[in-house]
Length: 345
Image (cartoon, rainbow, N blue to C red):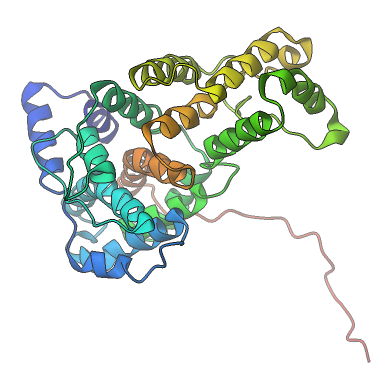
């Protein structure tokens, strides 16, 4: 919550500001009941990101009292609503996909603890929050809260620049994040590790890395390298530590995928081919293993990313609208085609 406040307001809160912010976010975690009926219109086999994109876009129909983008107070309220309701929406999507009843939020729990309970609790048996798991997921939320002018952030800004409502702009960002080259990277990492494990595990890691170096093989190393970080991604180091903590707390110290990940990292940090190309692990490399250990299904990984990134998106959107020089985004292109064509007879 401190990081969310910082991104929204530019400064960390004092104790009184923190308490007020926590209280306001907590009081907005419920969603209007008709949204549950809207969710029921999706098949249980629908992709979680398809459902989440639809639900967030539909918020403009349910919360149209805060869509005047020229009103700073409306922008603030919509920001709070999005931050508060995104965990509820992601948990609703998960519950729908597994055929379980939705769990309503509880005001006596933390932001992350509440999300875990809504995900894994049932009316028959409540969820006991593990402090290590809660702290790990909180770290994931922090590390993904904002990250400069990436594809989804640019999408939110460009969509919002037309004057559309904030819920439509954030839905557009979620749709962009859905792409495997952006938000789906940790899912791709996990699939890579699972494929290596299915084809021989640790004994085949060296062979796999040789295939990666062979450009004709078509084999790609996922979770390494970054457009911004040309050295070791500082977020990856923290996620590696978090991964160890979670696996230990849940009795999964011998998790084969984590051992594979460690071996891949060792080879990449020692092999000249990867070192020269600055292919170091990034934050996606370990976050998928952490989420898998917690019990989050792989198709929902990008939904967790969207939940975390919402505060960054809405802050960038608000910053853009508050700029006196603000105008609609209009990327240009230089047309190099034919000036004239003859109609064929």
